[in-house]
Length: 223
Image 1 (cartoon, rainbow, N blue to C red):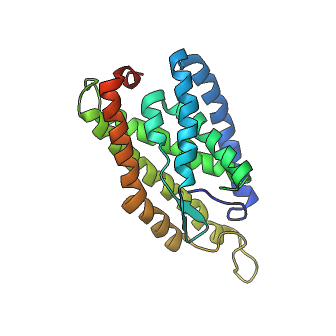
Image 2 (cartoon, one colour):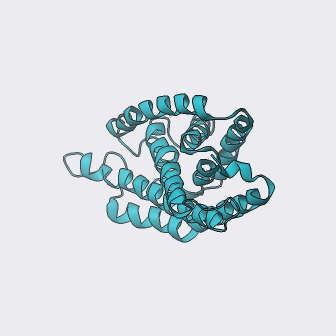
Image 3 (cartoon, helix red, strand yellow):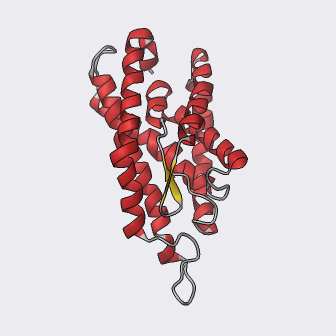
């Protein structure tokens, strides 16, 4: 889902920087106030985990990539605001040091993977596991379902960002100035590979980790 430089317009990239700026500010304030001391090492580990997971990506036609993220898992354990910070750190390092995702697209990539994904996954998890016991099987199942649909939502958002570029930005002859692939290509490709491949991987890993923590450290599931 990493959007590289040159595939979205400067206007689009700037727009999502403006959207993410207050969200980053809010996340820093909320995490500083709510994250417990024993959870701080987990936040650092989470950023490292996301960084490694997202490095295993497959190029997708249309200029982006497909991969798991792990954002819902972090949101379940530390909360969606902490997940936003962890994923943002990973995305910025990948863009600046490894060229994985564009610098001008950091705002857009963070909107998809650091905002939409963990918040959607977290609230799906909360809705399904509502009032369930710490050792209930509903919790890992709810986390898996949340992670699957949140990843699909993030990939759909990425596809729409790319797919609308040829419509909004083209020369007098109709040639696309940025991403050349419209919605008819971007959506099936991006959504398809995350629904049929990476979504299942994300759900499986999330299920197994939450199931393990239920036995070894159930306090992490009690935000």
